[in-house]
Image 1 (cartoon, rainbow, N blue to C red):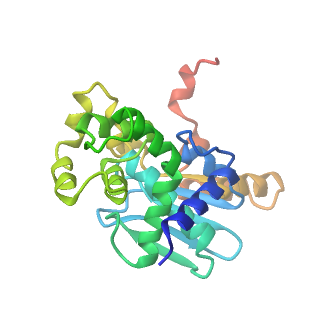
Image 2: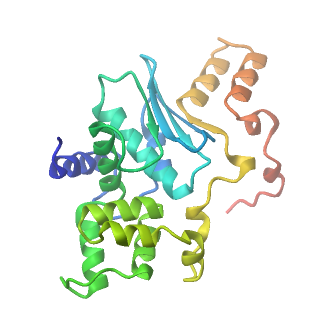
Length: 252
């Protein structure tokens, strides 16, 4: 079993590798696009799969279930980064939706994702501020929602981490899994974190695949027709036909 300290250190290293410190909330979707030869695919994968990491020898594809909440997608992507960087002996892996389940390696990847999005020191200091010092009282529902909003994670991911840190017990977790969207909305928060990607945007490919198609077209290695076919296969009809929103685009 990998120790929590080792997992935390691995997460800290990847944050540094991606150009981030160990305090700030991160935009993991944007950061991974700097990873060489990584293709990121968003697609609705049903209720049981959160994501997948697939190696093909020369590049890597990470697929994320866009049918899950945005907060959960952020966690899933962070989970898959563990497989990318620390599971080199696995050519591919498909990951289930429930956090904290599965093999010991899957549980380790979940903990890694939690530390990547919520570094130990950052979470510790936020909790200290909320409690006004190292007091033994439990966090309130409003405080927990504030934490998940700050770090950009789903309710499931936040409750998983707080239980890991002995801030909550199983009974607390079960009580707090209800009325997720409503509880955040009533506190004035934007609820997009708790909702899946809208259906008209839930299929998309980013990164290496798109760049390679452009490179091959510009190198005259493929025809315009083949280029457009590949982009359509990658759900990038916005590149082929243009984005309707561009007509009203304002340049800042």
